[in-house]
Image (cartoon, rainbow, N blue to C red; front, side):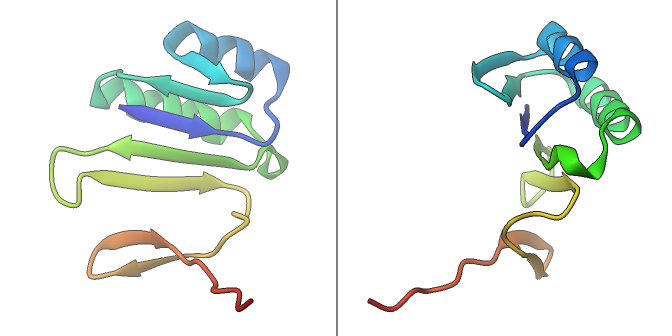
Length: 95
């Protein structure tokens, strides 16, 4: 499975994404494509999307931890690796 969340995609890329994915919300794409096709789609996105696109890609993997997270452009929240797990850092806001 591959999930792509974008801030803004170039129109040609968005049209191409609709060939492989459903778009349940604007700029959120979900597909159950095979691993080899998912890799090709991720390579396509790296070639055709500028950093301003703000992409966050979640790909399922057959081995632990079961997923991979990739970004194009700086993510809004920092990410870290702990023991091979890719995690998003959340800050606590005290009330």
